[in-house]
Amino acid sequence: MAKLYLVPTPIGNLEDITLRAIHVLRSVDLILAEDTRTTSFLLHHLEIEKPLRSHHKFNEHATAQLFSETIAAGRDVALVSDAGTPGISDPGFLLVRTCVEQGIEVETLPGATALIPALVNSGFPCDRFCFEGFLPQKKGRMKQLQRCADEERTMIFYESPYRVVKCLEQFAEVFGEERPMSASRELTKKFEETVRGTIAEVLAHFREHEPKGEFVLVVAGKQRKKKHQNEETTDDDQD
Image 1 (tube, rainbow, N blue to C red):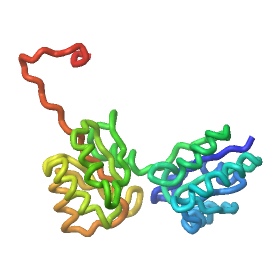
Image 2 (cartoon, rainbow, N blue to C red; image 1 turned 90 degrees about the horizontal axis):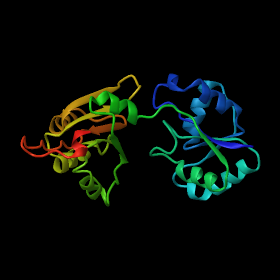
Image 3 (tube, rainbow, N blue to C red; image 1 turned 45 degrees about the horizontal axis):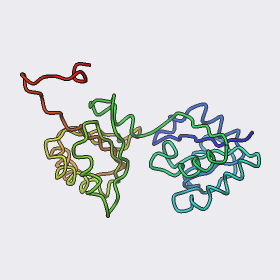
Image 4 (cartoon, one colour; image 1 turned 135 degrees about the vertical axis):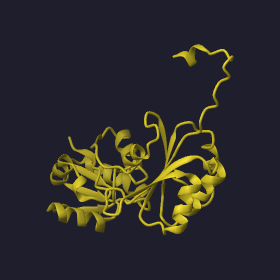
């Protein structure tokens, strides 16, 4: 029975693709790509020739049913995004949901994603975190940030270089200038950089140095207030 494969692709360094991902891309009948030009470059590097079709945020509502029917007809299909794991701030969810609803098998390969390296590299707790992805560009942006104001887990955001300074200014307004954070850019690439400090310090850095590359912003969670020494502890506190 044919299936849908979700195949992570490198976020920068082409050596980060897995052997299993290469095997799947060589074996499927069709590859769905967020941008066929970007994927063509990767396939050429891997010496793979396969039919390519576009599946991106502007057409995924229309093509999800079409491609699920292609798989149901017996053709194995791989979905890739321009970089990283499909479905993580990239197209993929609608096609996966459609396939699941129709009883079509879906197999997701492990592989590259920007949020985990940035999280681990930040030096903040990694045992519990929340991924916020890209904030809305206009309407609802501050409202979403304000919902995160009391979040105690480490928070991860994606941002473009064109909006990163504005985003850091909004972080300072909502989280406070002294909240610790890190900003990672160009992960796995030649000019990879992580800037750590308070929100005010990171903002000052990127006001002086033009932001370039895609950013992963990691913000420490809000610290819990320490209990008074004489305050009774609950069973949950003792666990």
